[in-house]
Length: 181
Ligand code: HEC
Ligand code: HEC
Ligand code: HEC
Ligand code: HEC
Ligand code: HEC
Figure (tube, protein in one colour):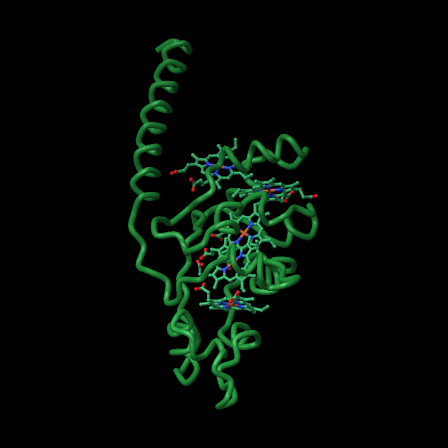
């Protein structure tokens, strides 16, 4: 076979593989997710909880590869689980807090489930992006930051092109093995 035939064959294989990937990704993204234990409202908290930052609940984002999901103790820091008898305005007595208050005496923590996912063989570090590159969380998570309820479909994943586009704009690496380890 001539070199040109190899190239043509190579291109058609890439096209086939690409088509398969696109369909796979679409199916993957439209899967219905089980509801979160509490219908947490990101937008409301960012607007009403004075001065709260994303990293106050996702504690590990500045220093670790992962960001982490909040413990119930953090929620009870603002939403008093044991209000005074006379305090009828307490969050603990309002119906919209019922799902949270069910965890006051429960064993264990709130079993949040993950909605963002990245392939096991791709390396991603929050510290590298948040602390070293100084990026805002919204550069990658604007949709959830402004949402009023947890996503019902997923898992949501960041396509390779999104990683590469930003890396190109910022002079960061495009070397396959920096991400594919
Ligand atoms: C450059 C893009 C980018 C930025 C900036 C970023 N993230 Fe992420 N985040 C991701 C990716 C990609 C995943 C999926 C990682 C995985 O599956 O290992 C993720 C996963 C998460 C998760 C899932 C749970 C976990 O423990 O990782 C949370 C929560 C999260 N990010 C919060 C944040 C917060 C808060 C900030 C800002 C302080 C932030 N992220 C900044 C890309 C980003
Ligand atoms: C820094 C304080 C703070 C923390 C921490 C906090 N909240 Fe809130 N939360 C608020 C404020 C402020 C409101 C809005 C109350 C209002 O305006 O009536 C609110 C409202 C709510 C509501 C009722 C509104 C709705 O969405 O229906 C729920 C439920 C709730 N929070 C759950 C949680 C959970 C779960 C956590 C832990 C992951 C948490 N909160 C952590 C301050 C906080
Ligand atoms: C008061 C606590 C609190 C604050 C503040 C908060 N989050 Fe969250 N976040 C949660 C909880 C609880 C969940 C899990 C339930 C859900 O998906 O809504 C979550 C889920 C997420 C997820 C999905 C993680 C996964 O894979 O399951 C991302 C991404 C995220 N938050 C980003 C952000 C960003 C960006 C900000 C700032 C704009 C922010 N969060 C502020 C409590 C918080
Ligand atoms: C919004 C912009 C942006 C997005 C989106 C983004 N990155 Fe980055 N990334 C950067 C910047 C900027 C750096 C360079 C940090 C430094 O060294 O100053 C970086 C660095 C890295 C590094 C370290 C490179 C090294 O030299 O070791 C890895 C690995 C990485 N990113 C993976 C990813 C992956 C995987 C994704 C997609 C899931 C992604 N990034 C999405 C901006 C981004
Ligand atoms: C900045 C990080 C980054 C760099 C650099 C990068 N990739 Fe990726 N790559 C990803 C992420 C993230 C995914 C997973 C995307 C998803 O989940 O949809 C991916 C997915 C892929 C896939 C699809 C695998 C599948 O089965 O779906 C292939 C093939 C691939 N990368 C090859 C490469 C090659 C070859 C290079 C070098 C030319 C490269 N990548 C450079 C982040 C990167």
